[in-house]
Length: 469
Image (tube, rainbow, N blue to C red; front, side, top):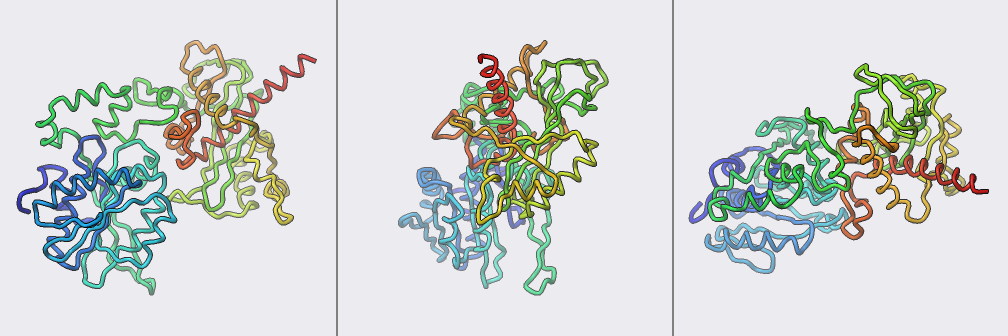
C-alpha cells in the first residue's frame, strides 16, 4: 500500500491472516479502528472491483470515529467519499453504517458483501445482529469472505466474544468450524482467530502521545486499568459489581469457594429465571443457619446466619447465547435429574421464580406444568423498585463477604458455578439508570440471583412487620 501501511506486529498480523473471521484488539489504544480500515484496503487491493465491503458501529454517533479514521487512510489513496460510502479507483466500494438491533440487520437481507467489519464489537450485547450479517458474506467471484471484529474486554458483549474467540484457542491459533453445503456435504471449514493488540503495539500513538499510558492508569481502578492496558479477558471491567468482585492473592475472586457438604440444618432451595428462545437460569442455593461447618478446604468455618451460597446451576443456553427451546416439562425433569445427581433429592424447597411463569395464557400456565412434573415455585418479589433493590442487595451481600470476621449475611459462589462466575460479575449498569443493570446483557443468572436475594429480604421484612403486631 502506498502512503499508509500497517504497523509491525498485530496490525501486520491482521492483514496477513488467512482466517475468514478475526477478532482484533483486546486493549485500549491498540489501533483497532485503523486495523479494520487497513484490512479492508488490503482486501480490495487483492480482489479489485468485485470487492464490496461494509463496516459497522453500533450507533451513528459512534460511526463518526470510523469516518474520521477512514478519511486519514483512504483519501490520500485516491478514494472518493460520498455520504458514508467510499468508492475506490479500482471500482470497489465500502459502506459505513450503524447497526443496533436484530431488526436493523434485516434491512440488509439480499445484500452481498465480500467484507464485513464490526468496530468495537463489545458494544453489541449479543451476537445476533452480527451473525445475521454473516449471511450477506457471499459472492459469485470466488472471493474468500472476510469478517473483522474489534473489541476491548468489558462492555455488554464481553461474554459472547470471550466464548467465541478467546476461550476456544490460544491467540493467533486458528479455529476450524465445520461447514456443510446444501446437500449436507462437508466443504472448506470457516476459520476464526483472535489477534491481540495492546497499546505498546501502537508505536505511532505512544510516540506522538507519550503520556497516553499514564492517562489510562489514572482513569480508573486497577481491575479496569488492567483490562484496558493488558487486554485481560479474565478480569471484570465496567460491571455493576466490579468494585466488589475482588481477586485473592492467587487471582481467584474472594467470593468463589470450593464446594463442601451442605450441613443438615441448612436450607436448600432454588431460583428460576424463565426462558425459551432466550436462555433460562436455575440456581440452587444453600442458606447458613449460623452454626460452624467444614469448608471446602477442610477447615472449620463460620458465616452469619442467612449467608447464602450458590451451590449449583443450570444455564439453559447454546454457544450463541440463545435459548434451548425446551418444553417446561423437559426443564422440570432436567431439574429433578440434576437434584438427584447432586444428592439433594428431598431437600430442595420451592424458591422464587420469574413471575411470568404464573400467568395463565390460553388456559396454559408454565408454573402449573412444572408443578405437574414435580417442580414447584414461589412468586418472586417484584414489587416497586425490586430491580434496583435487587442490585443493592447483591452489592450489600458481596460487600459483607469481604469483611473478616463477617458481621452481616454475605454471598458466596461454589467454583463449580462457572456460568454464574462468567456472567454475573460482568453485568453492566443501565446507561439510562445507573441504579439498575442493562437488561441487554446476559442477565439471566443475575435475575435468578436477584429473585433469591429479594425473597430473603422480603422474609425479613415480613417477620419484622409480624413482630410489630
